[in-house]
Length: 160
Image (cartoon, rainbow, N blue to C red; front, top):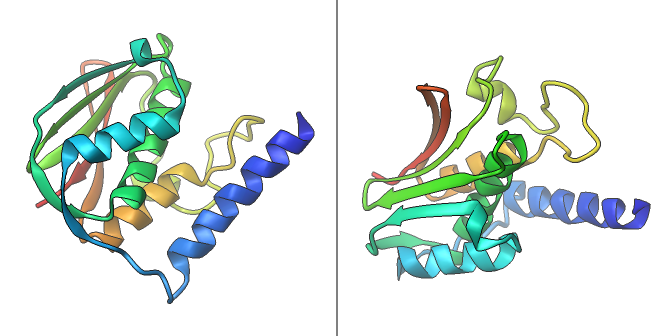
C-alpha cells in the first residue's frame, strides 16, 4: 500500500511539474467532447454506475489528454467527497459541470486550487487535484468556477 501511495504521489507531482514548467506544450486540436469524455472514463477506472452523464457531443479546441485529466480529477473528487459516491456530468459547448452531493466548501475555491490544499489532512489525497484542474483550464483559456445549489456542489469549466 505504501508503494502504491508513493507511486500516486510521484505521478501527481510529475503532472504538476509538467503543467507548470515553461516548456509545457498544449496540443490543442479541434476534437469532440465525446472523445474527451470517453478518454476521461477510461482513465478514471471507476464503475460506470457511479456517473450519470447528460452531455451533448460538440466540438471544442482542446488538448484531449490534458482535458481528460482535468475531468478525471473533478469526477474523482465528486465521488470521493459525496455521501452517495456518485457524480453527474453535464456538458455543452459553453460549459462542463461536474455535480455531486456533499458538504459545501469551507473556503473560497482559490484556497483549494493552491497546491497541497486540503480542509484537513487525509490519507487518500494530496491536495493537488483542483490545482491540476485549474492549471489545465488556464492553459486552455478556460475558467474553473464553483457553485452550490440545493445541497449539491458544482465545479464548472467554462469553455467560452
